[in-house]
Image (cartoon, rainbow, N blue to C red; front, side, top):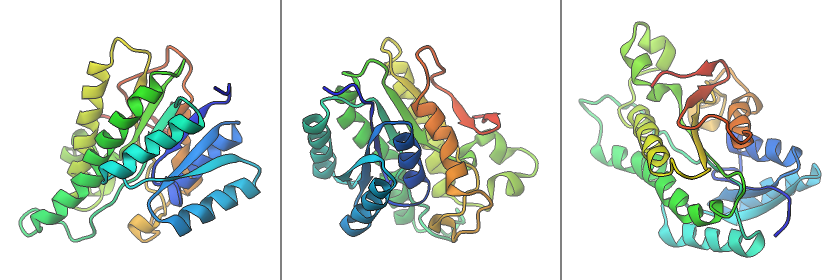
Length: 243
């Protein structure tokens, strides 16, 4: 196995995921660019390689068992281990998402990607992470999943509009993350949630006020934590996000 650090970033063909891959690549990592759609994935890999980065494409649909298993096989064959997994792929489910009128199918679809997809990918990659000297898992959450901020004064300002599919999916993801932390407490895997802030991406019609590069910063920091770093935390650029 190579001494070069190996990472997999899901949903890495654009936006925040692309910038996470670029940031880790700039640090000398070899990065798997996980994405469903081949044309966009190939284009992202080509751009990153043109920038001199060591990246490789990974066909990955986080909602499909066979796709995820094949991705794990690819990384095992290519690198033999995984040093960092960044679960970035996610969807909003569109809008409006008023709880009194939402189609329950929208909630199922969002949870399938944002929560179950993370579980599916994480479980497939855990054996490879177990072969790393310093394994890291970063789950891309959002402050809209913070129950403290949702229930506090000024919730509309701090967490956006009512979104009964997307916001609770991030609360669910946070809770799932803590269950992994508890189960894997006796291992050296550091597992944390990252909030990128309100980033201008196609998920929000590019209405965000932060750049994808800014949104990627916390995830990159958590993916490269030194041994003995925090685990079981929820972080943004300014520090800790309340659960």
